[in-house]
Length: 207
Image (cartoon, rainbow, N blue to C red; front, top):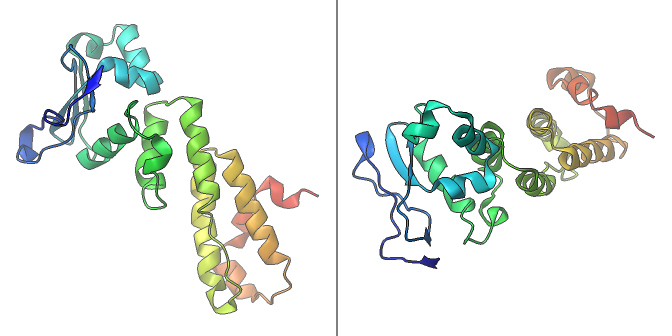
């Protein structure tokens, strides 16, 4: 295998045909054999690379689904830019998924795709470790307490949705620490931001 910058373009067709997308930088003597259609934009990909990280594609190619014959997968409601970001991160010749994660794309791009395409445990663990570092933290300012709890509730919902155990523990610890510093929390504030939802964390009741 070798890499080539001169031909490192992903073919785009359809409504956004004027926009060029990068193709995986891994080059072989074989041409891309799969077409992924995202929101009307077509991407040419390698089936063996997709199968490296996605049980969804692995199963599709083995199951006798029509896609295993047509080699075309359609995701009409998905964002082409999100697919581009995902393929860059999953490139086996690249720096690795962790290099592409940010607090802005982890919940909006990567975790939804990892979930939908049934990615392997290794990638979930990478994302879980990353999320532990972006858990909202209270900055010892009672005027910002409302915002802190709102962010924590949002983070809690996403952590539960994607079943991230390390992040779950970190979220509980952050909330426990905030409650344990002896600040005055107005009852109406607690009701308004539904802190009782946070109390649903089993770990909050642990010794």
